[in-house]
Amino acid sequence: MSEYEDVCALVPTRNEATTIADVIEGLYDVGIGHVLVVDGNSGDDTPEIAEEHGAEVVQQSGDGKGQAVRQGVEVIDEQYVLLLDGDGTNPPEQAPRLLDPLVAGDADHVVGDRTADMRPGAMSTLNQFGNRVINRAFRRIHGEDYGDILSGYRAFTTESFDRMFLSAEGFGIETEMAVECARHGIPVEVVPTTYRPRPEGSETNLHPISDGARIIVTLYSLAKTSNPLFYFGSIGAGSGALGTGLAAWIGYEWFVRGISHEALTVVSGVLLLLGVQLLMFGLLSDLVVTLYREQTRRIERLKE
Image (cartoon, rainbow, N blue to C red):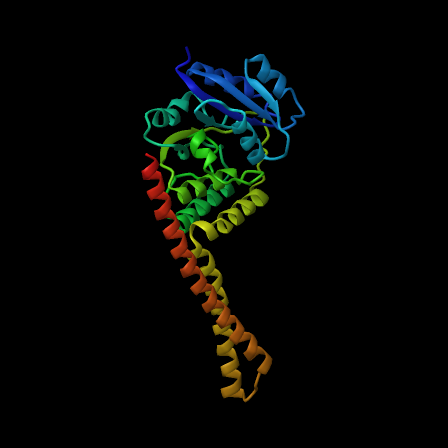
């Protein structure tokens, strides 16, 4: 009997022929009996190699890692899901670190913190900088510290996953899951993991600039439901600051040079009014979100 008989390892892949066999065998070695590979139309032998090593393989019906994760979870019957990449960067032998808190009931979502043991060459300087910026932004916006929200090495219960509203198609799926955990108050535990460089012959599917920009946009846009005061307040503050700066310049032109700018005066007033309204809307929205969370916690306690 498998040590983790109620666990399915979910491995989204695309052109991972050089590493997928070692990943699958490593998962079997730690006692995981079911490995599900969702293949994103690889141009190499990834699906064939995965099947030869005993994994269940399904062809992805859409595009992007996010869609692959959602598709995979839909067909999983086990209670726990271990999510990891098929490129060998996430050591499968460390899977128990993520699974044990779930099985023990200490958490419903576990994040593997890659920054705890980042091996040389595993992540470029640009990616490390972007990772730090995004994690700090997440802590500021959502008020939680999950260590490494962009980590693709994580484990969760299918029940907690079903509570999330996920729509990201690509690498923004990790950011969405972190935001949803914060928004729904899902118990999260962070554990240290190793992040290894990709082996020779294995190419990354991540594009630092474009994917990083999408992740930042995703992180900010999701704040409107989890931290509306920050979301609307920041836009309002920007509008108010622009209106104030424009008003100051108009005042200078009028009192010092005797030049009037009637049209710009109207624009300045509109910007200031918009800033105040957005701030007020953010305060009201924050109140609604707070009340919603309190009611949700009460309902969950009644269910228990």
